[in-house]
Image (spheres, rainbow, N blue to C red):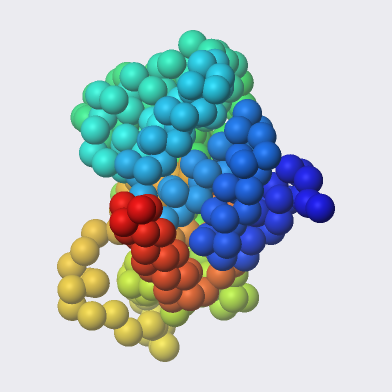
Length: 307
């Protein structure tokens, strides 16, 4: 007979394999045995975030809070969900509650800063990034977010220092290389910018970035190759084809600490950031599995209603 830990470990494995429906069923078995197994709630949050079911995610956050009113990850995850739903006030409230519970954990500071930036409250966003970096100076997401806010204020040298720190933490961060390259180019430091874009191309050529992953990836790759062509005045061959619609869509500037912040960031490299765990899967298969899981969950809900 399987124990609570057995069901939980199986759910973990299934989630990492992108089998979200099966993972959800295992987590339900966990709760059937022990509805106070808090670690399983955290995986429920991740599962519904992966499926884009943010309202369902909030329901589970509230269930976890009923079990443990001081459960840090419930409030932090609730903030992530509210941000995705475009409800910044509720997101800020959730992040602040998480900070009140654990004031030295960096996650809610980064989430809070992201929301403040979305709202155009750039100085407060910068302050929040700095607050989080006090507790984890190598938090790559916070360093990139801080750099973008510094750029907003025209503090380019400080922004470059933040990007430099991010690349010390993760030398293969294509997002950090891209933003630093754009900054250097704007600063007139063309050769340095060229080196950053070449570094991205090396990662692309090595297969670290899947050029066929999705529209965001193809646009990102094409912009990289175009930048090299313009800076190096050479014709880069075999750039991935993109549609006119893709060409007209701007690359996102949002910094994501979870996966999942979202689908618009799927073109980024797989980095060891919380909630950002399934970039090794083919994006099309992930989407298919996500849709299948949503459909099966809807069927289950309909059966419950019929009962």
